[in-house]
Length: 255
Ligand SMILES: [Zn+2]
Ligand SMILES: [Zn+2]
Image (cartoon, helix red, strand yellow):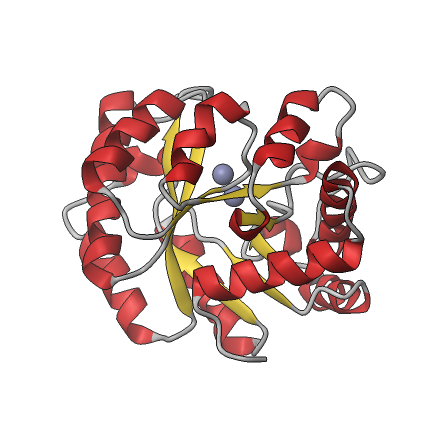
C-alpha cells in the first residue's frame, strides 16, 4: 500500500518520525509520498526522502503560502528537482478559497506559474482544491498539465467528472470515512479504479476510528477499507490498484 500524500516534514512528526514509519511498515504501508507546501518543508521533505529509501517527495508552494512567492521561488524549486531523483512531482499547489490565507489573484498566478514549471520539468502535479473547483478547472484547462491529481478530493462527482474525463486522478483521505461524507463516497463510487489513489494528508484529517488524533501514514489502511466498501471490492484489490496507480503517477522505481 502507498500513502500518496503525507506531510512527514511537519513539526508534528519531528519528535517520533522513526516510530511513525515503523507503524506504517507494520500496517503494510510500503511507500509514501512526502508533500511540500512551503520552500522550507519542501527542503525538509527532500532530506527525509533522501534518508529513507521507501519515501519519495514533492516540492511546491501551497495556496496558503502563495503570498510568499518571490522572485527566486521558481529557481529554488527547479534546483530542488534537479538535485535528486526522489522529487517525483510539483505540489501541493492550487487554490484554497475556504481559508483565503493568500489573496485569490495571487493564488491563481502562483498556481499557474507552478503548473507551467511542472510542464517544463515533465513532472506530474498534486493539486489542492478547496471551494475553488471552477477556478482550478479553468486554469488547468488553460495550461493542460499532462498528469495531475486532485488530492484530498471532497468534491461532488458532477464537479470533478471533467478532470477524470481528461485522464486526471482523484485521491481520497480519511474525510471519506466520516458519517456525513456521503457526497464524497458517491464520487468514489463514480471514479474509475485506475484513476483513484488513497492518502492520509497526515498529520491532518485522521480517519474513523482515529478521528481527532494526530493522523499518520499507517491510517491509510482505513481509507482503503472505506474505498473497498464503497466499491464492493476486497481491501487487497483496492491495495493492489491504488499502489499501481501511485507507482505509475509518481513514476516510482520497482520496489
Ligand atoms: Zn491539501
Ligand atoms: Zn496536504
